[in-house]
Amino acid sequence: VISKNISLKSFNTLNIDSKARYFAEISDMDQLKSALAFSSREKIPFWVIAGGSNIVIREDLEGLVLYIALKGVQVLDEGSSGLVIASAGEVWDELVEFCLDRGLFGLENLSLIPGSVGAAPIQNIGAYGAEVAQAIEWVEVWDIKNRSLRKLSAKQCEFAYRDSIFKGHLKGEVVITRVAFRLQKRFQVNLAYGGLREAVQALVNDGEVQQNAEIEATLIRQIVCQMRRSKLPDPSVLPNAGSFFKNPIISNAKCQQLQQQFPEVPLYNQMDGSIKVAAAWLIEQAGWKGKDLGQVGVHALQALVLVNKNGGSGTELLRLADKIQCSVKQLFDITLEIEPQIIP
Ligand code: EPU
Image 1: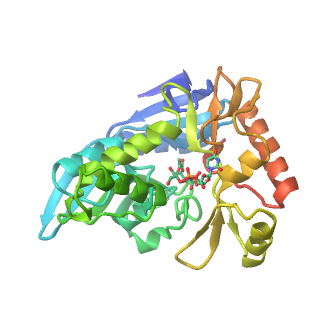
Image 2 (image 1 turned 60 degrees about the vertical axis):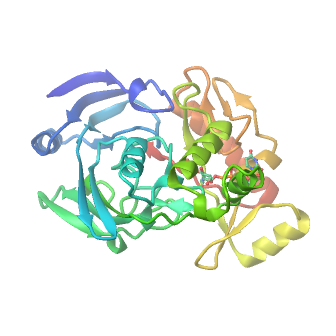
């Protein structure tokens, strides 16, 4: 069923009140096929949305919105691991909890990230020392041109920091339908993120847990949830789309220059030898933390998060983003790249 002139306000976590000319809720493959056929017959563009937690809707969408509501989770027992196959419309954090309840580990550091399972591989969601790419076995997509389902291995997905083939080559070519996760039955704690390591150490010091051997995945989930809640605004209370910019990757020369000028600059060495600088720090130095511009603003506790305080539009948010980018460019000669997908 295709509806007309639907407000998207409740379909994006920034609460932007733009309209979709046409809107179809997709609960099965037949609905997906017929909605795509409608878009090609009417020669109108389409956009796929699900949790709506990583999009900025710039203006009304003169086309068709496919709201992905494909549901279902399957677990295959495969010896020391399990393969969890989840449909794209499943809620991400519900899947994390489902897996932990079944003693399948690997997603716990990614607890409480808003959004859907199908969106997770697109930007390769990451937090607290983990990226979803590490757990993905394959991604099933509906290939729009060939009208067929196919599976992409993790390698074929070309995962990188907040990036994948779904943002590049395959953008607009496929619709993600299911994602398979390889999860382990034996829990191995990942304390790569400093803040998480410190939080666990504090519990050890307090005698609440005895050394790493006793750390359970559910404890990691609890700590991650606590950390997120303490810094990141809950979209249902203060509309936002998480980090609005990527942490920029900078050259070694740039890194040395920054360190000389600002010895306290937070830098992160990547596995591949490149260096990331904390965008939140750059934005804070540029004086934007906690600042408002009309109905929108920069979160007071995390400068990387833009918030929609009072019914601001997509254009207003992008105007604020542009001002921030200009300040950071001027001050540090670093270009900030917007992280959520902008539509249209
Ligand atoms: N910092 C500031 N000012 C701030 C906030 C942070 O100077 O207002 C500094 C912190 O002191 C720290 C550094 O910036 O030294 C990094 O901060 P944090 O660890 O909070 O993480 P982040 O780099 O700002 C990234 C992800 C988040 C993820 C966290 C935790 C990106 C774009 N963002 O943020 O992901 O939750 O690490 O792992 O990589 C998201 O993508 O939507 C998201 C929330």
